Length: 111
Image 1 (spheres, rainbow, N blue to C red):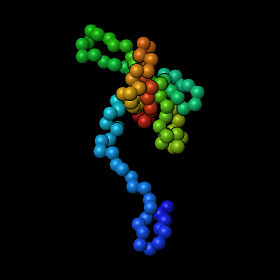
Image 2 (cartoon, rainbow, N blue to C red):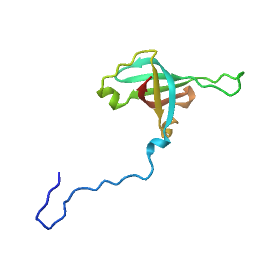
Image 3 (cartoon, helix red, strand yellow):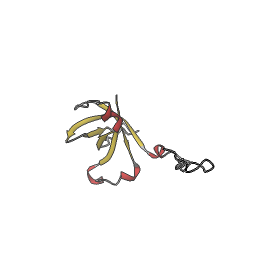
Image 4 (cartoon, one colour):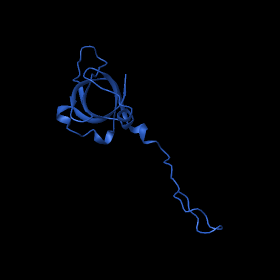
């Protein structure tokens, strides 16, 4: 809401400061993750299979504990075990429980 005290004064609203860089560029995206387990609330455990350039090597999978994005909750998108999803992880949260290869992230879409 914009208010003016008298006719000659300028409106006293806040100016939004835009960030120069987008913070979404820093996120790590995992495509084709699979929901392994449903947890209480809107929390899911997603398994991401890693592939190595060497065909002889097998890398262990990464497990991500994900919440649903608010847009998906609002639109009531249902997720069940076995669904393919895209997850995003903030690099600042990469330290979360590294000995078990579990990260913290967000599900942004169902494929």
